[in-house]
Length: 389
Image (cartoon, rainbow, N blue to C red; front, top):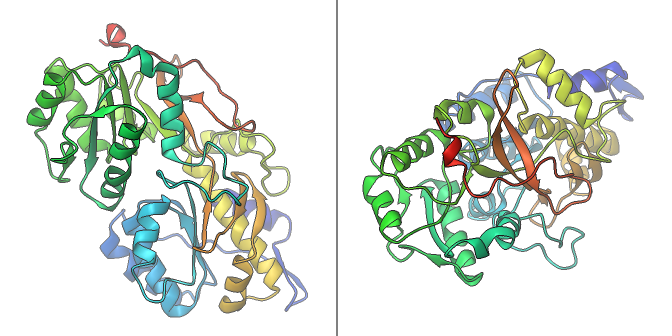
């Protein structure tokens, strides 16, 4: 987000017709510490004290976005960020009327894109890419799957869609009726769950939870000699800083969906910024490897400045009306909001590989259903336990 603001201000700012000139952007950052309780208070403070014209964020968990949406609605301030679609719409559409000032980009968990939409092709749902990797290697397994998810809005939404999706594709899901693997966030002992997976010869492990409980579960899997051929750890496997904390060689071969990479083709930034140059700026500043949120943070600013320029004013209601007509090619690809004020974005599947880079672990794209997202490595199959130290 800082990079996008730097880029637009370098060009003189955002042209606002009402003032007949370009205006620079000021980016105000508040740290909610990923605590939903703090989000609303901080957002209200920015609305009242700082008199912000818009709220923005990268892709973050649904509980963080909900308080932002409430404040945006109260003060009629446009808000854009990222979110998985199903949990977001579950919150938005539970309100009457649904939130009107919130515009979310994100991916779909399993709900297909309507056929009239340009995104009604493979690669816009987690189910798409998950089944793609299974199509490649599923016949090399016994097609028995174990699923897991944390008992929060994201995990519950995932668990509602994926076991039925796997079964529809011809896989057996162990313990779906008893919701085996759907665990409270404070769980620290996964022994009973793992033993049931092991007893039923589970060879595919697939789920969605934050990194800390997954790391605990994955260490216990190794201690109990449970070694599935495939491990898909949605959310838990997203970020290097989390994966690096698994310990030892436990990240090796763990897969996850993701939503942005510097290899994206034909996805413009502001001025001469490209996905690759944005990534290079990130590495220079942070000294860390890829974080896919840098693309989405940048995109959020692109969306807002486009709407402000088309609205020709800083009036929140007018900017909000312009958001509805967004059709913009961004650094993360094309953004166009649907009737639920959601824009589905492309995703791909990667696995963590051990490298000689200073940060050791890198996310390598092994499945992509998009010509603008190139595959950057060969799939690791099966899990490389023989290389674990």
